Length: 505
Image (tube, rainbow, N blue to C red; front, side, top):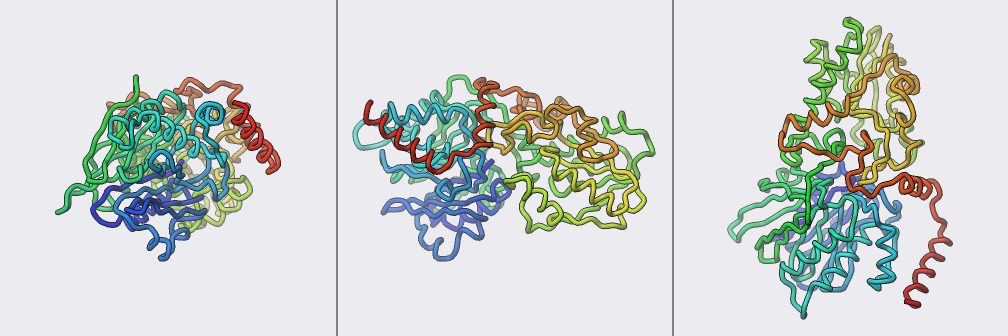
């Protein structure tokens, strides 16, 4: 999961990009980067850390230009190495800077093609570097002469769709020409388009979530369609074209559960309204499975579960109270690498109000249960605060399968629900009772808000990988690589082998 933004303006964009990344900070806390385009080429600054820590006044002054892009990242492919912070740059053809949100499922195959066919060398394990080089190669193939037109750009994107598998929402800057945005043919990762009318003409912004547009005074125009490419030249003229053969819209259901801000609208569905609906359907299941009178109070696990918890309490006519106070200066535990760090941060992040728990039977509502570390700690905190009974409810179904489309849950044995019944998960998190949302009710929660949404990428819940290229062998290789990271010497040996292959071919 990452957050991306691109802007074409009539005034300097460095502050706009910085402010947009602050609004998208929830999508990635590992690294941040901004690149701008101006008369002398590109300027770029990127590093590990939060937006406010990566960019200082001197960095902002070194980012001139009226067009540019930015990204906040947390790693799902590659590593946390600062070299893998985005955006990525290639100098030919024209000069291209690119950032993306998602994960390429055929990145290893593409790396081989890079060396043997495209004659391009990669310096990192980042799939974004793979993507920018695939696009650069296809743009070079589509271009005749020394100039560039939108038709060539769209032809290159069409070839990217044919070669690349997985999820990807992309913003790219082509030096001297303009800003490009495109989305994978399945529409897994979100991207929207906004505009701002000025005395000098229209300005445009592409972003992962609508909140980035609205927070900076841009008007939401529409979502970028699956497979569609949008090209905005440096004069502010917008071109668009469908570049995929058979695009279908399958937004990631986990965006609505947890990833996106509640004030965003994704593919025509309000995230907040969808979470209210999740609470409504979850209330029906709680009513069926928990005896009446067994619950004294409903409490959310702040912050993303709050809408679902409020609606659940309303539907069950139960008292709603805030029992946990969140330290907002601690990062989101779900996207923190390392089980030990996640466990330690839970108690730093949340503190229980003892008077709200003492002697009560408490229903705790969380957005989801992934690894179970946070849930177990929270249940224990509720008991230590004096709760006589702790019931746990998840607004999402059991997470039983790895997500390979850009969410950091790639190994099965890290998922508490994998290979366990609901009763076994309940014992693992030490709750007195556990209620999960049903998969169909989750999907219905979003469809109720926007009936045009009929299909979803919900592989972590139902095991259905919509790109059609994910096998058990693929998951096994992914998990082996995660558990056995390559030492530096192996990386060097692989680089030398790749170089030798290029020379032989």
